[in-house]
Image (cartoon, rainbow, N blue to C red; front, side, top):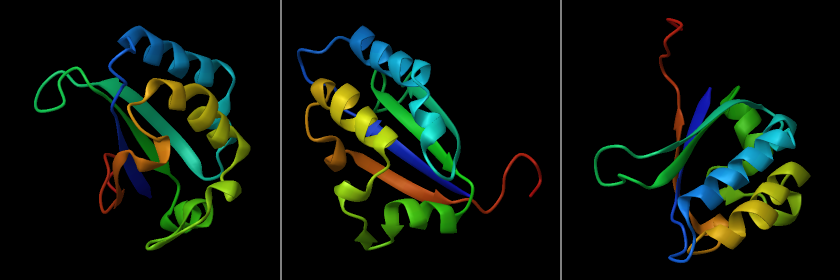
Length: 120
């Protein structure tokens, strides 16, 4: 399993409710259901620490192989033209107008899971 954590920095003119609305629209349109290998996700807003009040998402993929197939090998990402249509809609139509920068340049980190709450 792979977990990717994406940090979102909203543009100064964007209200938090606009980000929430974009997430609700993406969920309502089933965009995250159409990402190959994505098995779960969580989107939240910081309540403590350096990112208090800021938004982030946790994307959970079924395996490192599925994650690599989708996004490319570490150090060799696939070009944006090969992203799934649903992800392009999320990034280009819903997310891009809200962020301080290009969605492809957000701060993120991906982890290969070595233990989970299921005892695996």
